[in-house]
Image (cartoon, rainbow, N blue to C red; front, side, top):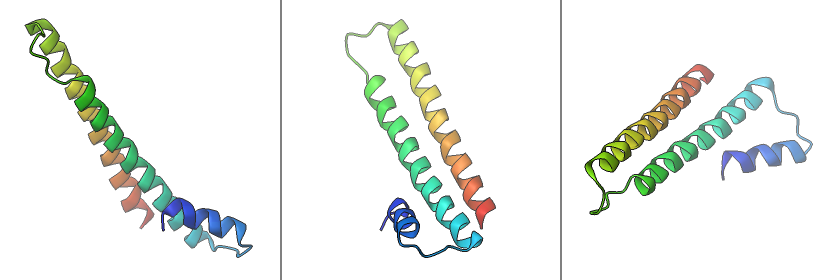
Length: 89
């Protein structure tokens, strides 16, 4: 079950969570969302920056810069996710 489903069930079941359980559950939700976001950024980078044989060198350079920026953003998201996960445990 996903962390979001677990959180929804915990909120609707009437079972009170301890602060530690709630923090752990929220950390799992955050972790899953951050991972999905980083994957989406990488996927979009591959689509937007795909090499086209008709591209000029200038367009190719711009695409490479854009791709580098987008993959750096995905890496930053992953790093923040890892740090948040480490802080929660």
